[in-house]
Length: 199
Image (cartoon, rainbow, N blue to C red; front, side):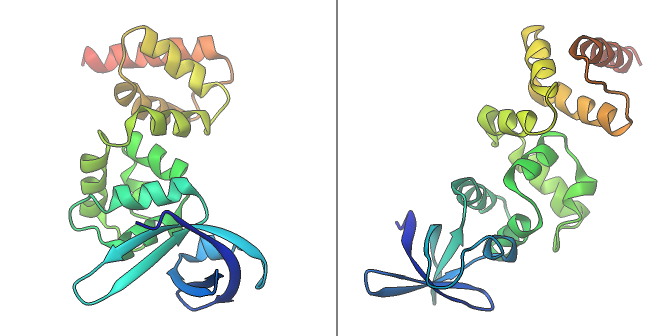
C-alpha cells in the first residue's frame, strides 16, 4: 500500500523514526541497525515501508534497503513469526547473511538471533529453504567468497542442485578445507559428496 516514504528525517524515537513528507509526519518502526545508518535530523531520507493492519492498530515498518523490506515480508509468511520477530531477524543480521544461513541450514547461526530457539530455527529453515529462490541464493553465494560463485556454477552444470551442495560447501569452508583454487574446491566437494553417498 505504501511502498516507501521520501522526506525529511524529523526525529529518532525509541522504536523508530518520524519522517515529514509533504506536510505529513509519518511514525515508522525501525530496527536499531537501520537507525544507525540514518542521516542526521533535518536531512532528506528514503525509507521503504510495510504497512501492517492489525485488529486495533495500524503500523508502519521501515527499512533502509528494499532487500530488507522483501525479507521482512517473507518472514511474515513463516508460521508463528510476527512483525516483532521479523524485526529481530533484521536487527541481528543483513539479508544476505540470513539467506546464507537458510541455504546452508545453519541452525547455530540462526539461534543467535534474539527470540529464535532451536525449534524456531528449524521452522525457519523448513519453511523458507524452498522460498528464498535462486536470485537470493545467488546473492548469498556471490557475497561470500570470490571463488564460491564459480564453484556453485560448475557443480550446477554437473547436475547438482544448489540446495544440495551449498550446505556441504559451507561445512567444508567452516573446517578450513576450501582454498582459493576453484578446481581444487570442485574436486573436494565431489569427493566429499561421493563419500556421503557411499556411507
